[in-house]
Amino acid sequence: AWIGHGAEHEKVMEFFRQSGMPSDHVVSPGKCPLDVAMRTLASGSVALNAYPDIPSLHWNYVLKAPEFLSLGLPVVTSDMPGVRAYVAENETGLFFKSGDWDAAFDCLSKLLASSDEVARMRMNCLNSADKFDWDMIKKQIVGFVVEKVSMGQPH
Image (cartoon, rainbow, N blue to C red; front, side):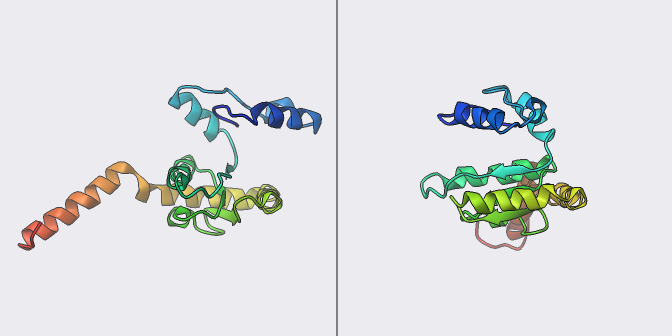
């Protein structure tokens, strides 16, 4: 699934067509509402987080990882700063050096070759995603503040 668009979108879609990829294997709704995007992404087996490691932008790119985890999608991701806070190697995903497309392909191929491994990682993803839920994070923050205030520590 490819959500949104981009300068390379048509080139990639044409590459898939010319490579003989069955049309029902590629879903590309373009720019769409969030609920449609999430349902479309959730229909996949794994997620590819192949954003480049651009210092001014990489923190936003990293936030795709917990979204994918919450959908139960093992994440094949470029190894950007911060992404390891979400993705655990061989547990919820696999890493490759940013821009190393051969390594990205190898990771995807390895994972997709084993439905048992995908199923194991999917369960790990769903189990780990809870700790990144906004309600859980807010509860932790409130708990920390209440604990510090109740102990008479400055706030």
